Image 1 (tube, rainbow, N blue to C red):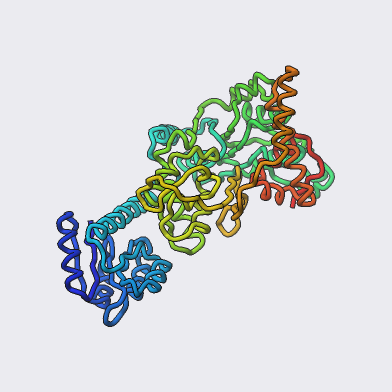
Image 2: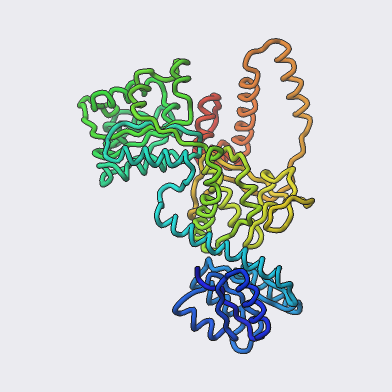
Length: 506
């Protein structure tokens, strides 16, 4: 571990801190001015920097600016007198980890330095892990099983079926399977079968000949041809229309297909990796998915665990996404306090890794200060909870911020920041008379012995929301998805399932 640097023109301050940290077996290095510390910074760096704000020559603020330019993740604690509070706030906004007001309690100072030290060591660990495992992060036993399976399949071209909840990272696993396969130098083509209208999906998969249908003004290669000698990833395969399943089965069986409107068979040398969040066995029993296609796809099955099954990975994923988001926006990386991280790890997060990534983007943009406490998280997550403002994560009586948070299934991207998730500052909505009407309707259906009440009311509820949003956006489907806080793929699927008319692409 590198030493803790103490920069202060007051010899007594340096002496007290040196002795207190020595009792904790923590190495230190002291400087009487910022100029000497800046010179030392050319050849090395501390684990934590503790600096006075007012010194002869260069100030602590100038030292802070230089340190952050060279080592953005290095925690800096600023020592200040109460009269320098404005300067301390400016330092905090400039990236200081915390400030220590004079006169300070030595035990409090040591505790603060220890917190900064833990953060510094944690950041170093995350950087090493990120460099070693850039594709998929995960230390939980369930994820280690996935990594082992990817390793065993690295020299194989066998068809793989990836199952798991929405947002659990199925496409990342598919890309890793391709990257570590003999086809790695060839194309990886991904297609979400739920996002393409039924009438266009056949052409999207197999291509079309010129004049095959109205608007087909030129011959077009489909995804199978684009992925020749490589890998074709078919996401949400469970939503594929039944008649197209027959055509896919033929390709998997003998490797031949026809373009739409074509009469010449084409040969496909493509490895197919499919993924779904649905229970395909259940869909086979319902007659919605071909059993023979199911067996063709289900050669090797990889099940991805939900985030609930790998909670120990939430801290490392959170730090990774916070670093990624800060880099995309060109801002300082936010840090989660121990209490906030503990609270985050206890949440259900039904949107899984995708929801966590969206949340980290929200934190980077919206959370106040550099160190994020549990009470700083979106209102939808913290509603009903009360937290202390300290990093300990102890519970006390303070109100959470009134943020409204909604997580999408599928995030679009603008300038590297997911946009399909809407984050707004607002007061929580109060329940109106519709709740009473819903209770009355549910009671009537239950009393009448109506089967599948949840499904019937749920479809009415979703249909009403989507129709209202489409009316609000003048039929623009993607805009409606953003307003509702759902993904574009999800609204496309829902419009098809619910038979809603009047939608159009933006």
